[in-house]
Length: 123
Image (cartoon, rainbow, N blue to C red; front, side, top):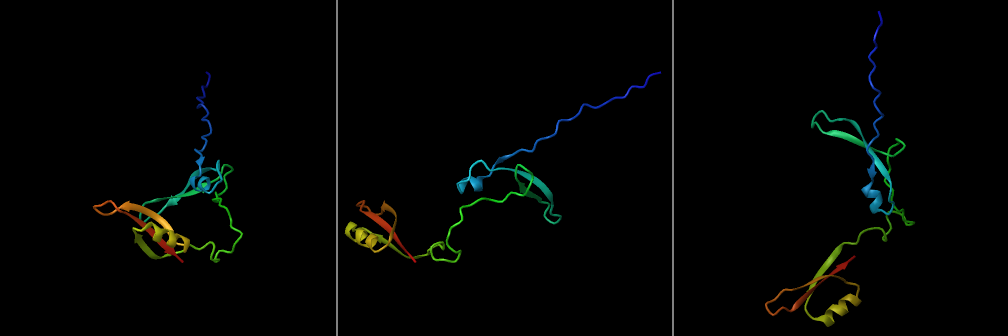
């Protein structure tokens, strides 16, 4: 009598789906391929938790351009809007732009279609 061993066909190794990291691409570093690895599930909410991994299996760190300035310097902080002006006179608009105001938009706001220029002052 002969014994027949039924062997299963070997399954090919599943390659992890990789995709380009959108945050790295937006920062100017294209072709940073990442994948997702399931790390668990939150028992209270039932949501799955995931971790970003690089092509070589290590945790992905987003790339960004580092400024040569310290983090708390005035050049890296966002300036907040302190004043808004809606002006119809183009001479006054030019004067405010010369004083450092920023142009935001313009639109015809009246029945006579006189354009209003919206300017903001930031500090």
